Length: 331
Image 1 (cartoon, rainbow, N blue to C red):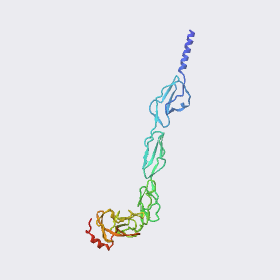
Image 2: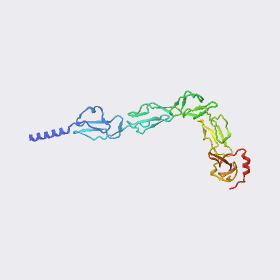
Image 3: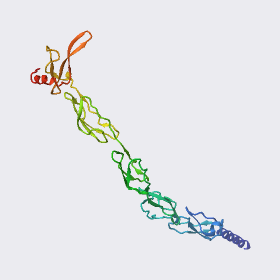
Image 4: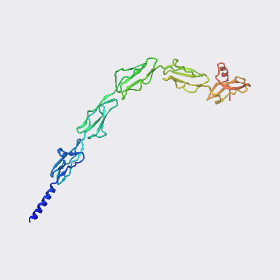
C-alpha cells in the first residue's frame, strides 16, 4: 500500500515538473520586438505573458500583440507590423514634389523647381517616424546679371539684375549694323540668351559685272542690305539673279550675276556668210531669239591669213548694217 502511494506521488511530481517548464526568449515577427524589460530576459517562467511592439517607423496592422508561456512553449503571435505612412508633403510654391520612391517610413521624396526658379535648401526629404523630416526647400525666382556692355552700341532697360524671362533690347548707332539677335532674354540657367550681338560697320566692295552695268538700286558706299540690280550689255544675256544684296559678312548675296555672249554653235545660222566679203555681218538665231551678234572675222595664222566666223557684240557702227539685214536673211 505504501509503495503504491509513493509511486503515485512520484508521478504527480513528474507531471507538475513538466507543466511548470520555463520558456526561452520568444521571437516575434518582422519589424517588432518585446516591450519593456522583457527584452533583457533569457527565460520566462511558465504562465508568463509578454507583449510585443512594432519597431520605430512601423505600426500594428492588426492581431493580438501578447503571447503566453505554457509548459515551455509560447502561444502563437497574431500581430503584424507595417510601415508608417507620411502622407502628402506640404506644397512648395513654384516647385514639384516627386514621390516615385513612395511615402512610407524610410522612403525619400525629391523636390525640383520649375524652369526659371532656383532651389534653396535640401531637395531630398526622408519619411521618418514622426512624418516627413526636414524643412521644405524654397524655389526662388532666377535672376540674371547684366550682360557685358558692348564696345559700340547699348541695351535697355539697364538694371542691377533681371528676373527670369525678362527681355533686354540692343541697338547700334547710325552707320553701324547689329550682327546678332536684337532681343535677349534671361534664361533658366541665369544668363542672357542668345549671345550678345555686335555693332559692326558693313562695307561691301564695288560690284563689277563683266559685260554688264548698273541698272538700279544703291550706289556706293554699300552698307548692310544695300541692293543693286544689273543689266547685261547689248548682245549678252544674264545667267543668274540680276539683283544682289550686301550681306552681314560683307559679301554680295547671291553671287554676282554673269553676262554671257550667246553660243553661235548652239543656234541656227540664218545667214552663213559664205561667199561674202571679209567683215560682213551675219544674223544668228539662238535660244529662240534673233541675235545681232554674228561677224565674219579674219583669222591670222603664222602661215598666212584665213577666214572664219565668231560671235561678238555689234558696235555702234554695225547697227546700220545689222538693221539692213533684218528679215533679209534666210535659212
